[in-house]
Length: 170
Ligand code: HEM
View 1 (cartoon, rainbow, N blue to C red):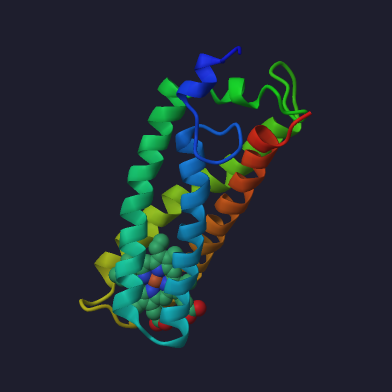
View 2 (cartoon, rainbow, N blue to C red; view 1 turned 90 degrees about the vertical axis):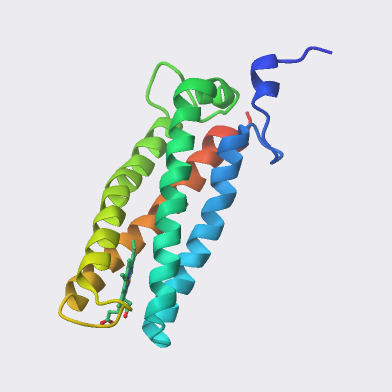
């Protein structure tokens, strides 16, 4: 039996071609989306400002650590292009759906990262302790909604990229 060491060394836990880190991020984003929706529901319908703050700051810190680990893995450990090679939607030397999906995903992920840092830092600085509505509310509601939409978009486009690159088979 022929074993491809490059692939087995990175083997993930989902029945796909994804590496461990890719699989982890794909599953973790389900939890992020659920917790984010819960946190916004808590502040919007129950006025649970402190729980909203706790969940958002925790999500922010965990996401920052996960993104750093993911970047290191993608740059130095996992050759995702080799894992995407069997996909009918991937081509290494020309534009293909996988590259377009990656571009759309990055168009959500990069601005969303910066926006989350800004929304969390200004929230911590401008809301009182413990958190409650105040002069910062209207700006925070606007940018908080955009930041949340950005994170949902990041998750959905990330799952799309993962499917095209590491699930689809020719
Ligand atoms: C990226 C992180 C965050 C996001 C995406 C976010 C998102 C939101 C959204 C969408 C709302 C409006 C809900 C609605 O009524 O429709 C909201 C309200 C609120 N958030 Fe955040 N938030 C974040 C971080 C924080 C932090 C760190 C704090 C506290 C230090 C905070 C405190 C509040 C408060 C007090 C309100 C209620 C404002 C009001 O209705 O007057 N948020 N947030």
